[in-house]
Image: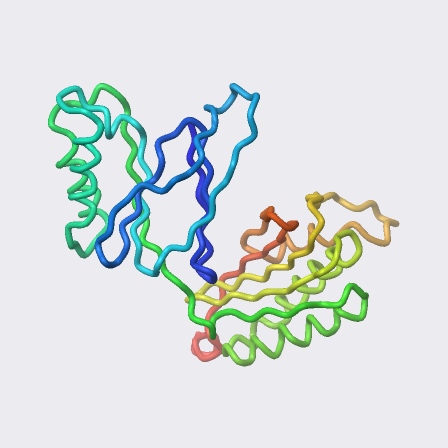
Length: 260
């Protein structure tokens, strides 16, 4: 079985899908606890039906609890009683997520479990508006230069000018790729949080780009290879309207960079 969740700290929206797995639990900051209504798909490998995803908005500071069915199927009480115990443990005020996990396991497990148990709890956070910048780009090669200029100006605002050279290269390659092979509209988004800088380029094509090694006399084909070399991580995220290619860097403020 599988439960898959993607949380966007910019929009505070969480998208989930499950394959024969129990639905996740949510606890809001006002201590309301409930199960998310995620359509139940068949376990992986059975096939036959498509998987449906659901999207929900989570208030900042919500708890999202993911678990295997062994947690709620002990031999000494029914599942409704186990759910009540889990919810009561989840809403108990604590300072750390480790403590929340301890409370849940203590409340639901009274005997040695008959099945493997996994419990994962996450607390949602939202990024403030000044940590995110986005621009809609024209589907024209001239937009690449504008995208670089916008990225450089934003890095100056964030005090990350020392990261401009690599960031502009990444932005150039991702925007060029979207304009050449994607479909408009094209958008560039930059996210800065703590020591992480993410550059995202979105378009409405669902085609996933693949990195390849260009031959000596090829005029193109090196874009994603260059991005992979410059970024700490990169990848593709599919959306209901197309795809987003992202690249992540580790950065430090200009003042810290000068100090070192």
